Length: 342
Image (cartoon, rainbow, N blue to C red; front, side, top):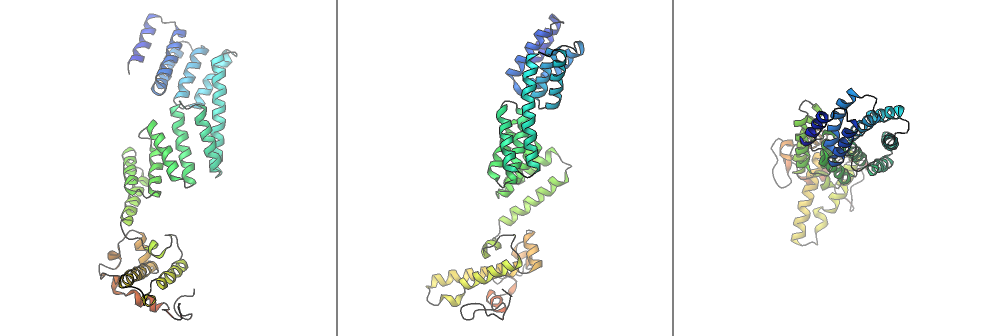
């Protein structure tokens, strides 16, 4: 806490011209407390440089502080200035070489990401983290960037791990928090996503897109608590009308009561329930308006105006009627003239 600050004040009072001692103390502080120490050094070195602006040691130590707080460009300027004053300044030479390499690899990662080469971006960001694992401020950005690249590859669990690492460095880092929320949404952890989005909303209450994300996650949670009509038909939620009709034909034929003449009563009951579910799912997903309402999070009762009778007769339509309407059973399959143009 204030120990470092007190130390600087005492140095300044006892030996006001002792830049070399101040540099040693600032170096020690950065080693002892990498994150906070660097921020303290940025502030303290500025005070010393006002008195001795042409001291390469002070410029170098301030450059290290700037680098420690993730300010690469500013740090490079300080090392360059130190080397202009003393071309053989060893500390500045070493730091400038390290920063140029970091900067090169980071930019290569960003370029790969921008071009959609996500595997390469992940490799470059990983390489960059390995170059200096202790630079928390720099790595905060790198972990968040790498999480985004992994997210783009649909590797949501790995992306979430990087978000957790970034949030371990800075607990309320907005970008990492929003990325983690998006990962949770994809992994169907809707409550976790809502929690992250709500925390993000506390950090940035005026951002409209965060409010929209909270609403969206709440709808997805509500949808997850219903029967999944898409799964009933064995299709994805991105299925086309044709795919929905084709899946309905296949599913309804599989569990049609007429197929169950030799089955046990238990098997017949299971098939009948399944047949009704398939008809119910198709009734909603084949109707553009009902499908839109379903996708927006409404329940079957809400879609059918709360008029749904139980047992698969939602909205008063019997699945067997739907089946007959769309071709029925004929010669072990749909009649070629009826219903859809499969």
